[in-house]
Length: 296
Image (cartoon, rainbow, N blue to C red; front, side, top):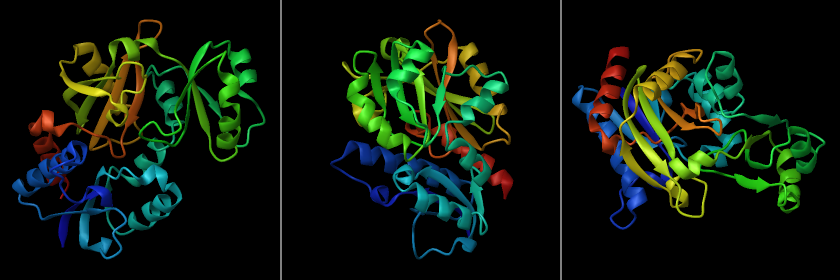
């Protein structure tokens, strides 16, 4: 019996000496694996879609770097429902299914968490971008799917460029729900802060900055990450957002920024497989391992 299976995707099963990105993924997972083993736990790291592993043979499955799930969502969703009957998932299936769709932002808003102003466009809606922008009177916006990751189909638009995106929008809205948000200038000018929360408590933070000429802070698109000293306001905001979840997650990443009104707001609450930058604070990996040990 394995105590904890650490989940990745097949691209990151092996370390790389030539690709820094792949090495960082492997190293981050290794920090978690070693921290769990230090707690005396038996640990295995495998791809979530491993065809040979029998999931009844582990007590916990810990989602870490399953970064292909949003490209294979239907397959992932079926697998998630099946594996949840055989072992305990961290975070839970209920949390994952809630967090996987950006409609969760509305639930947090109802509980007092300030979110990015958002307009949801449901799958199959008979509308056009021009019509939506005219109704909302938004001049500059960002469009993205409600189920997404790594900035998949994320587009920055303004009223003069809408026609360029109408065709791709019509295709996307015929297949999935979309979310439209006002473009947040401070994310480009100041960056976005990611705060890591383990077992309900803040551990460390990073500042993500987009490369010149881009608005996406992800390192997939050339963004940079640096250690960040979070303010008390940011820490309280992050912990409050996590406590607003329907159940307590074992880990969370809370992405915040100063919105166009100059107020701290939530960009994303990541509960599925967020990068947690343990390489910046290995002690946080130990805290995660200790929290999991308490569950066994």
